Length: 404
Image (cartoon, rainbow, N blue to C red; front, side):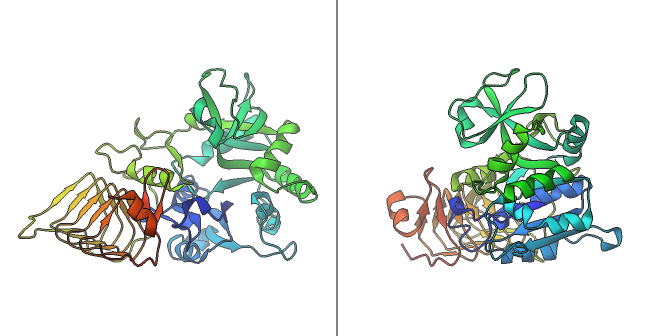
């Protein structure tokens, strides 16, 4: 069960017209492709995606991309809020599971993966499941090691010194205890879980009857199972995925803010990328538009331009322009003398001659007029667009960009 119903307000304006899991990433992918690819590569191919907010583009992506063989009983299907338990939307991640208990009744599995839909990573879920079975846990939470100094931004797992049992689940703690084998690190929750089915059903029913609950997995279900001694942690650093390199092994990014999203894209464009999309042994699956290959065209005044450390998707045409450290999605057009630096361009963006785009995220179909400067003057940009705390300019879908 993949949770894809969050609003993603911290990613505005990118989420003003789409669900967060449907936000494009790396030129041609959607955020949800990573969770689904990990499950599919691991051999777990009966997948329901629980949706709610602005789910149309996500539903279209799932229906056109994620087609499994029904002959083998496999499927990926989106499940909107059905209000089976009363006339209300999902009130939290646990309530999303509770309102869809019928899906569990239909399949009657022994174990259930519950994964988030908006993180960038590779993981073999089968290794986590085996750890869960061996431990006898009711729930296993995937944890990633992070510096203790960064713990206040995450849910932190305090585990037993001599086992994987969770002693406490700490929500954004200021001063958490370090790991016994690495005092300067803590285990942060990755938002991925394995539940023993009977345990999940019982705790969901109990949570639904609790008037004081916020009906959240991390905030309510996990603490309840910690209290009963049924919660264990799986250390992500023990997970081994075919084709990984030492540089990108155990990479995981929560792209919940504009700055985090921007940095995760920039991780792709280094000569030796921090996250490697070119791993053929554990591919990331997605859909492709029918477009010709990317093309670089020389221009009389500007020559062939200057293109380096960038990802160019199919259908792009760059004519006598400079493109450095950037990600261009399908069918972008960059006209002569334009400069694109440290930026992410979504599908069908058109950048006019002589324009400058720096440290920016430009949503689909946006036209940057000739000579316009984006990411050069923060104060001027902030009058028209969203500027993140880190100085990234984000231009949302449907925005009409004025001339300089």
